[in-house]
Length: 306
Length: 300
Image (cartoon, rainbow over all chains, first blue to last red):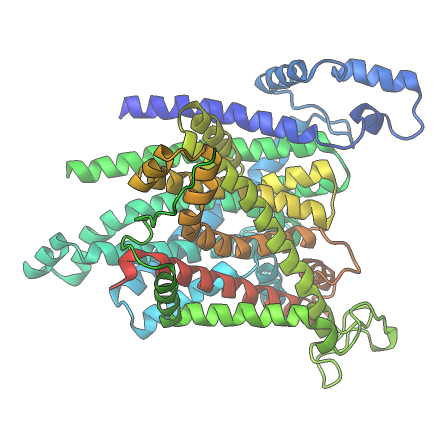
């Protein structure tokens, strides 16, 4: 197990470096001279040359990339073009909010998704199963930005039981977390159902039934444990979609998280913020995937040993 | 001197029985038609395509016609879906908008599929270091969560519908590459490929004439399901103001304008959302049906 963990960590490092390379490379696609862009309109030739010198833009690309990578290791992600604040400081203010939103959303994804999947699998092809799976299919197809607006209209405008926007109390978390977690819950529900159905047809479940075990024991003690393994991978992948989804949900509910920071920065052409924000979210996703893989292996191992 | 390469009917993973192409197609179509959900999905997609093509004939008003006297009118017999904040007919805008939203989705998937298929074919066929390099690049692209890679590309290229198409397409590349690589690895080991190679066919001919046509099934399934995601992503980016710009009747842009009037005129945001949801649902259930129809395990 230890070897596996070390090997996975070792495999993650090139991916992380690759992510920094892609982010760096994409920012090179910006049309025009970045020094001119930074200096603003009407800047003198000397000013532009000074910026170019200061930021190392006159260096070859590979030198610029090496400097960029070294700066990341030192925790220097550059400064915002808008307020000259270090990008890392801006990220550290916003990140806890996004992590909180992601945590509650993934909780909804897991609890709601698995519950719906189990309910469906217990009585396959029944009215309940068909209804739950139909709702799940709808859940996958609804645009989160529209679903969020409709929830806002229903619960904040019509029923007036939940706040419209902001991030001050637990009540503020409910609508954004449901908006973000619902799509993932639909995918987890479908996966749990098909995985459960596959396990339920196995011989050892038939044996458990013939032994006269209660249905709840069979479902929760024998079937669910094995059925959960593929679901773990789906939940891990959903975390990525969820991190990307925060961009939309934070914008709808006016939450000052990482996603909204990136969108605002794109609108204001504040490229260091975009670069830092995308890099940070991607590195988090890579690390989460690493943990999911280790967890998956651990879970699988335990079942094998049992 | 040219060597004539005879077409060999391959014994392919997707259809283990060797049969005539016509009967294969017939079998696939009957399998697809037996799947009720897939038929409903196909029906939805066809209706949307027809509405998009004939939008100028069907739409009761111009999508850009401003009528401030009738602004934010709720649904009525004159305006079935009501009017927006500038008095424009929402139904007409949705009909015209289907051209943009579906167009961006199709273009993005075509772009992503084209690059992804080439990468996947080359990686799977040549293997060794070529495979390692290409697939590690694809792994890195997959390390970007959700639409964040698309956001970074738009940040660099600037907000516009064309850049959204490129960004959403780029975000599909690694998914196609992975699927195509896997299928290529399986097909290239089959005997008929060795036979063609021994007849003197070059790599280009083997890859594009003999491997590619036999790995189409997973590509078609993936493309259908990706269309749903591409339409959602493109609409989402336009919703954020990073794609189509007002007064464009693109669905995401319409939803974004409707957000400002959620309290007074919720129908402005309601209908474009329903339009997106039904179309995405159509692609999802059609994609699921296609996957089942192509899956040999489903054939009894």
